[in-house]
Image (cartoon, rainbow, N blue to C red; front, side, top):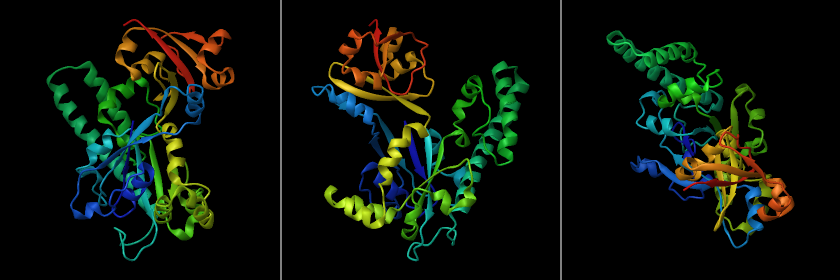
Length: 357
């Protein structure tokens, strides 16, 4: 899964990228003409994996992970024509980094500091990019359907015409009732206003007290936006310290925790994913899968051959396994269930897949 950091220039995108990925990318690298996005793989913490792995000290522990992408700043009004629009469409989730700090040496792209206005402006730009895409497709469909009848093309046109008013009004597509069949029909468009969106505000040092409650600092944001906050200057300094030195500095600034582990712990849920675990011959591993995924789909994430030859899934909840000790002890206690292909995987399931090679 991929989460892409994006936003207007000079907001702290690369600073946040460094904090989340443990990277040391030069923050001003883009000023020197660098255009390629930064990409890192980031492990997702899960206490359940740690506890399961502790029962198998001889096996390797492998955490689930996400790819984190850091894009160059996109100028105001240029999202729909940006060279990086394709990167946004490829992402599973979008993190909009918003400037909330004042600095005379780093001029704001619009000349004034207003995080709420920047958030609303970016949301409007994402919707506009979708509207341009939908209108372009509708225009091509109209021409094609005049030449030749196409039932699938008719369905696509009807759906786009139904969705278009929401785009035209600026509301976007997120939250609209779209059936699985309809979602499949428009999946290739990768509409931005359908993707999970989080606004991550880079706060000024004076606003640190509101770092865990940014909605209190910016009440005009309103629901149902997802909003988090970080303080790039302070957290970057703390991240450079030795582990033993960090608690004292965090206490001095009144920080209960750093933004990186908080975000990483919420990333799967942000993307609508759940975690399941496997105990193999050599490793104990966490995987992520979309909510409501079937056992067959989960098997396919591990390997396509397992999905093709699926026979059954042996399932136990992580908490139940931890109470009983090991999978062998769970089997002896009769605590493992047998499930078929259509079983809906639950967050925290420990699964052993039986399949025919």
